[in-house]
Length: 252
Image (cartoon, rainbow, N blue to C red):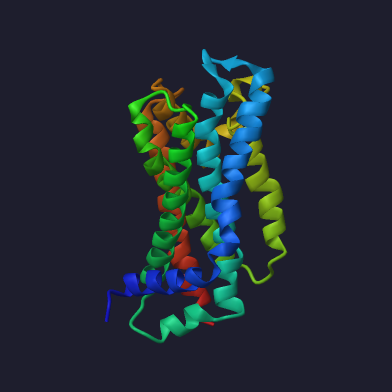
């Protein structure tokens, strides 16, 4: 038998092999269309930000937000469904697969999905000439950090609830505001001072700033170690919560 974590990953990949066509548009085509319409179309009216074209400025934000949204979207109904309706995790618990293996296998699946999308997106934006630094090659690693920082707590949340109506609140009051106000489309310093801390506590903002520093070859607002540390803190706390939530849910 494969390692339990690998077995969980294989199960998710096997399911995705049957459903991948449904995610092609949202994972690959939509971000590129969004980049062209906003980065090129709106960029002609915006001009430059910080001495670079709006297209080059928005690319890292769109990449980080794509990873953020994919991680959250995948970690909602899929996790709750495997507990409440499919009861796949209960079936896994009857095997040598442990709770940590379930969480680790799921995170590996999320990372694989996000990394493929990030590499494809990076290649397309390179064709547009929107990458200004060789450090752009590290942006998939930043996307991975953003993905785990977002997916881990949302996975824990999905494992803790019994009604999918809570996801509408998650999308409306967490995912959408984070996308709008985390520096993806305009600098955070344009926000009122009392609102800026809301952006700073979002893992997406840290991912956007790290990605922008890599693609533009410029220093981020905070030290790189601080941005990365915040993402790792979100990821570690989320993973600990997810392991605890899975364990409690599987006692039913």
